[in-house]
Image 1 (cartoon, rainbow, N blue to C red):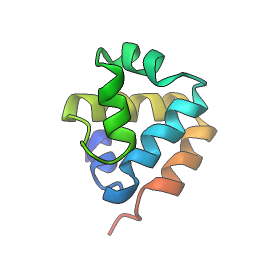
Image 2 (image 1 turned 180 degrees about the horizontal axis):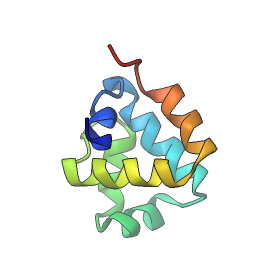
Image 3 (image 1 turned 90 degrees about the vertical axis):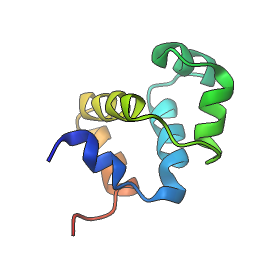
Image 4 (image 1 turned 180 degrees about the vertical axis):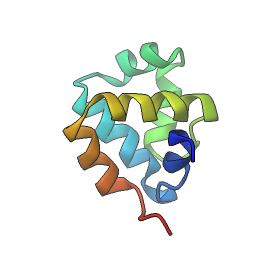
Length: 85
């Protein structure tokens, strides 16, 4: 299973919380996080507030960032991903 698919299994109400937690873990403002993704500040804000779901490409990037965090990323995964069924 591709790693990005695991992120798609994130609890839908928590995808925004995951994005916020990842951004905070990276110590980035919404503006700087948006720049990393090549999107606008309002887009990050909408992701975090659950109004819009990140695109598949953004989900791949989010997954990569989580994996790069090592142990801290594992904690995010345990917190925001549902168990594999």
